[in-house]
Length: 106
Image 1 (cartoon, one colour):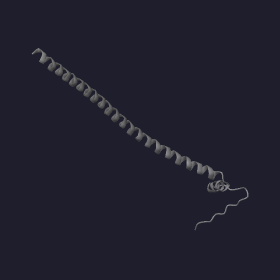
Image 2 (cartoon, rainbow, N blue to C red; image 1 turned 30 degrees about the vertical axis):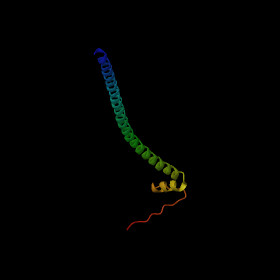
Image 3 (tube, rainbow, N blue to C red; image 1 turned 180 degrees about the vertical axis):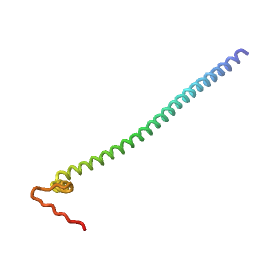
Image 4 (cartoon, one colour; image 1 turned 90 degrees about the horizontal axis):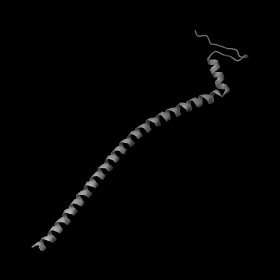
């Protein structure tokens, strides 16, 4: 009888070893998948935060560009003689040979 039991025990030992290796492998896969999922969620949250910051900075950049364009237009206008004369006349200044004519309101 001892001869017939020996192959059964080795077979049971092999099955138990295979089950142990399978459980170990499954445990490793669960840990690895959990780590991967955690990393993915963390990076997705970081990306969303960075997108929001990017949009805020993009709005600031566009506002600064708009202001710069307005100032550049004003500088370009100030480089013309006609615009300088218009500003001076609106403040009551005259050229030396000009005569101011005003209409009296009734």
